[in-house]
Amino acid sequence: MPARRQPDPERPRYRLAVTVDLARGVVDGQLAVRFVPDLPTDRLVFRLWPNGPRSAAGGSRLATGRVTVDGVVQASQRPNPTTLVVPLGRTQAAGSAVEASMAWQLTLPSRPTNDRLARTGDAVRMGSFFPILPWEPGAGWRLEPPTSGFAEASTAPAADFVYSISVPPGIDVLASGVGQGGTWRAYGARDIAISLGHFRTATAKAGPVRVVVGVDRQVGDDPQAYLALAVRSITDFAARFGPYPWPQYTLSITPGLRGGIEYPGHVMQGPSTANRTTPHEIGHQWFYGMVGDDQGRDPWLDEGLATWAEARFLGNLQASFAHRSIPVAAAGRLGRPMTFWEPRLGIYYAGVYAQGAKALAALGLADEVDCALRHYVAANAFRIARPSDLAASLRVVFPGADGTLRRFGGLP
Ligand SMILES: [Zn+2]
Image (cartoon, rainbow, N blue to C red; front, side, top):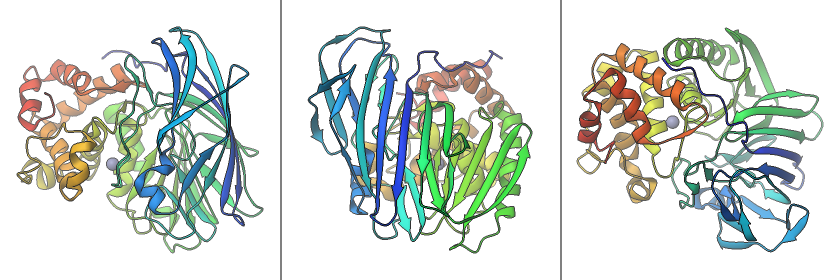
């Protein structure tokens, strides 16, 4: 087993100030980021995910102010609602640092929305909410279109975040990383998310990991039910795939959400999800959080593997996935990007989540698949992996893995 990779020492470093004004329904932000590209580039690109079709339809909007690069104001362009391009007027050399900063303002939806940006009374979900650098080391800017589905269609490199969250008095905060005195720090995280509400909380340890569950007062669920499931899931996946990478895991339960939405170190779930949703989203802490992928290009790398983790935890791999029949239009198309699934969202779950778990089950013994996935995590931690990276780790245990993945369409 290789030693686990560590985050790139030259990863982006974000500083954010986030001020939530519930009376006005807006969140004001200041962003500063130090970025060191590993390839030359003549621009900076930020993705503005709240302007994607699903969030925009809910009433969310992300506006940005003037962008300053290395102390100089730069003109920027908006080729589409989710993309902000800042031409540098020069070529930034690989390995050299650039500093960018801007003010931004997020308009929260005024009504409940089944989305990562949502508000129900004082309960607020803020995911994919600020301008973020969609850089894939070794490949450059990722410009995939947003999806109207529940899925995200984004990628971002592991980064460090130091961020302050200012909220009205009496509002509780759960977020990515570890918070103290209103300032949160998240290390080696490719994104951060924040939930606000009036939380009944329950806390426990899963080995070295502090687990905090908060249930908003508009939801009747018992935080202890989620806590027990979260502790067992983190402990189980640490044994299968290697240790959870951060000191804390926080989970918010807020109204108006079906299922769950994963962010590094913080997950948002809706009411009545102390079920398979809880281990599934914790599976994403390994597959998406720690080992990243481009969710627009290779959605199966995180959804198929999180479904595998969920099934292993619940013990229903054979009964629910290994022999599952996949709709004809999805069968053999596991590796297709979100642009393929966008007009086929009705078969997306079967084609990507279920078929991903089925493809892994077809490799051989489930315990040996777990072992290969542990290798994949160690070799690709804090990276953005591709299907070829997964195949390389699977081949360590299953020499014929490429052929099996090809049969499902997971490799070209
Ligand atoms: Zn998932």
